[in-house]
Amino acid sequence: MSFIEYGDTIKDGDTAIVFLGHESMFPVKVQHGTVTQTKYGVIRHSMDLIGKKYGSKVTCSKGGWVFILHPTPELWTMNLPHRTQILYSTDISIITMMLELKPGSIVCESGTGSGSLSHALIRTVAPTGHLYTVEFHQQRAEKAREEFREHGVEHLVTVTNQDVCKNGFGVSNIADAVFLDIPSPWEAIGHAKAALKAEGSLGKSGAAISFSPSSLLLIAAFQPFVDTCLIKLVQPASQIQPAGWCGEEKAEDTPLSSLLQSIKTNAWWFCF
Image (cartoon, rainbow, N blue to C red; front, side, top):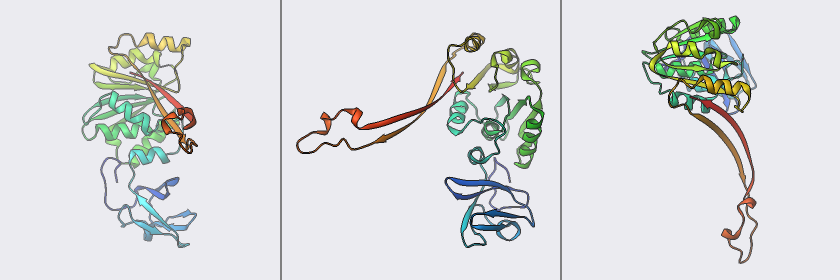
């Protein structure tokens, strides 16, 4: 099993996704002799999983059933154990596009965190590219190495446990793109520039950017890069209700405010 190559059959040692519904799924490591408890009963790995095809409908001991899905970076993002705040697929897609990543690209990332973005980057640059990811926290770095090994992508990623602001990425002039998701990105700009090829791209994410002193430092730090831009991702949730007209009243005479009850907005900012 590999997160970048689809395998048809469930094998001992695989990481699979147990799908109970769109709002209920979880990862499981398949092992001989192991059982997994669900609200529909027990799943016996030896009898119910190993040797079956991914996508199979498996009946649990209480008569209910689940689907067993092949893992993907998107499913992993939805189900991974959170060691840090993570980036989700909406964020990851724009990052991948703006950094112009493709198979064969060399990418540097910091910090690794829970590995949500890392798995997507690895899948994008495979089979001939490579990800160099730096994590300051030792336990998180060790756990990331373990997960990459279990997910069959360890040959495509190098995990380094160090402070990127002080020690950099450990590589020079080879990266097509660098992505920073750290508290003080301006302190790592010099190391990011050293890791990049002359035509490379640099990206930064943040929960929000305002005109605070730290933001001004960030903007100033990006000045050596060409085509600096700021992208705002918005996920609006709208509820539309009938206008409530009757008789001869026309829909076009109804104010828009009566059609839209509320719009709630969550926003993320990205610098490139």
